[in-house]
Image 1 (cartoon, rainbow over the protein chains, first blue to last red):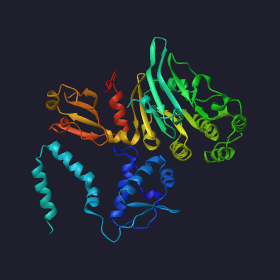
Image 2: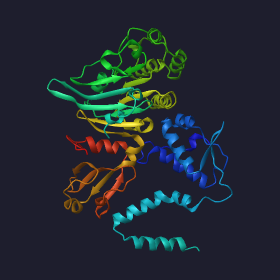
Image 3: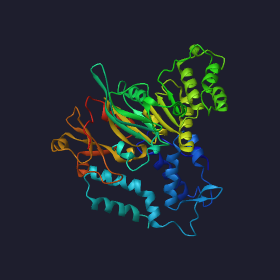
Length: 129
Length: 311
């Protein structure tokens, strides 16, 4: 993977560290990055995008804590092995968190009762089963 | 939020630039009104303010060029007004329009200045002159404002300062040179632990490289926080006319409010880390939206006395 594959929008309301973490999570979840793949160094990402290296470290640190990345001696950061099983539901659910937050926010703005939102969501989720 | 309390329990060495309760008046006008900041080592600290907010005055006090009426500035563990020569070689400062030694050629000036600095990096100097298309034999007085700014940045970065203080460093740079410059300071801060304080009114520059940001408005500090946290912890609550009518008290975490022409209300809220927003944000007729730095800057400084009640 190359640093310029990351898209950084400095003026977005979303902090840059979360933009980086979110993009890497998606690349891993979609299989574009597989266990053992090297992630560009903090210096490289910071240099290519002219951003603060601490911001990049913060994103990597968060993904390391989530178990998605691991530090390899002499190699820097690589995508962590999933130990032969799919990521836990919790971890996958975390991918949806921003969208869920957004739905919750809009539902409140529109004054829609929680139960109605849940009912509609259930219909959508069970449609193809 | 209180910048000075950040030094409590920490070694003063961890803060290369500190100012305590600085006041400064010019004529009858108060330019700085009780300003305190502690800038941690390795930080890229962005000072944002409108024209005339007091940024230049604060920086001149920090580097010891101006005496405050009250308060004190400590630079690299020494009082700013009595800095030793040794400390001065570790400090880099570029004023808004550098005009010294303008009768010299670029090369002569850089080599002359370099002689005073034990850590002068001539390789960096030559590489940067080439990359930024500066003719070394050109007289400084013949350079365009953008070129002069580039030479000033090369001069200060070649000294390998531990603390770099820059007054509107990128204002005359084209987008390519500006990106180059931002990259250079971000990497030096992150890797070599250089501490940077720079003032600007171009907030997108800050969003890229700053680790900390601080608003200076009408001589007061309005905000002093980590860049990432700033976006996580601030939001704008817009209330319709009806929703605004039922609201009189200040909301928890409210830092500014203004009435909109349509009778509605716009309120800037802040919260601890990812704590929930106050319940007024969840009523009908209320919209809560995240803000970028420019939104926040405008909300807090667009009108006299704006945003000026803090918790």
